[in-house]
Structure formats: structure tokens, C-alpha cells
Length: 110
Length: 120
Image 1 (cartoon, rainbow over the protein chains, first blue to last red):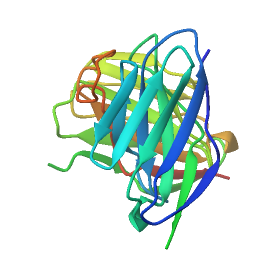
Image 2 (cartoon, each protein chain N blue to C red; image 1 turned 180 degrees about the horizontal axis):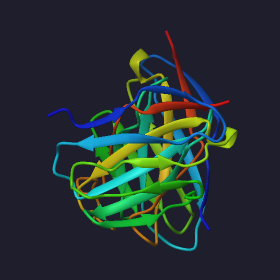
Image 3 (tube, one colour; image 1 turned 180 degrees about the vertical axis):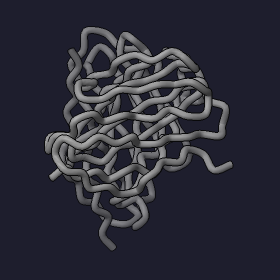
């Protein structure tokens, strides 16, 4: 089976950098995705790591280490609009199936 | 492009009733998915489809049925609604997935706005 763990809530200050961690247990997977979801909204795609290492997309970066069963999402230059929930999702051995973590609620304060 | 659209936005059902949640996409995506999201939780895959006429079960398929007769539409049917099916339902679509690549271009799912369903 697949299981993912994320911190339930993180608070940071506008302009700061925050890292949201995701640890997982899996019998095998193809990649790790990150999605953002504002309250009452639909998830939107942020990043995908199919290989170990860092992927950078503007203010967001994502990292994967298969040997450590660990990934993270890094948000730089935090803005108030970044207040949202962030989900990591494993792309399982049947690569059409994604397994989501319970999400991390990020609170950005002025 | 409207992207992924879902109807209805909200629905209240009585126990034992049935309904169909509608999902449509205009991006010509082959792959489509149905997820449910319970309060404070992540998404769980109910069913998915890799093309017209091809569907398969996800993590939590019990109590649901799907069909895919065209590329654009992927309705989700609830038979004999139960309180445990109270949730927010999201439909998503994507290009054919290409796992293992470094970047996300072929592994992004596009989500609809969701249907909030309450079963009383």
C-alpha cells in the first residue's frame, strides 16, 4: 500500500521561506506531485518529481529523495495569497493512480 | 477553453436515493479521474479512465459506477446513497501520463471546481 505523511499546519511570515515535508511508505512509485488548494477551491498542480533532486518553478521548488522516502515543497518570498493547503501525491506503480497525503495548511501572516 | 466543468455545484440527497455527477472537459484529454475529498483530508481516487470505453477502479470504488462513452464526458453514478458518501467530489483530466520524467508537463492533472454532496 501507499501512505504519506505531512505536517497538518505550518505558519510563516510574508516574505519568508517555508518548507513543507512529505514522508511516504510505498511498495513502489513513479513520482511525487504537489498540489495547492485554496479553501473551497479545486486543487491546482504545482510540481512533479519523477527523478531524485530539485525541480524549480518560479518561487516554488520541489525535492525528492527516494533513498530517504522523503520529499519537500519549498516556497520562497511568501505572499499572502500563498495561504492555502498543500498536498503531496504519490504516482503509484499503476502510474494512472495517485495517492494523496492529508495536506498541510499554510498560514502566511503579515 | 472552459477546462473541466462539473455539475451540480451542490446537492443534498436522502439515504437510498441515486444521482449522477456530471463532468466534462474540452481539452481533448484522454485521461479522466474522479476523486472524493472528506473534510480535512486528501483526495482519494474513486475511478479513472484512460480513454472512451475504458475505465478502472481506484482506491475507493464501492458504491459508485462510471461510464465513458466519449472523450469529453465522464459521469459518476451514486447508487443507494449513504451518509458515508457525504463529501466533495472532484473530477480531473490529464494528457496520457508519462511517469518517471523529471518535470511535470505530462503528469499534471487539471481539476474541476467540485460538487459538494450531502447525504442525510
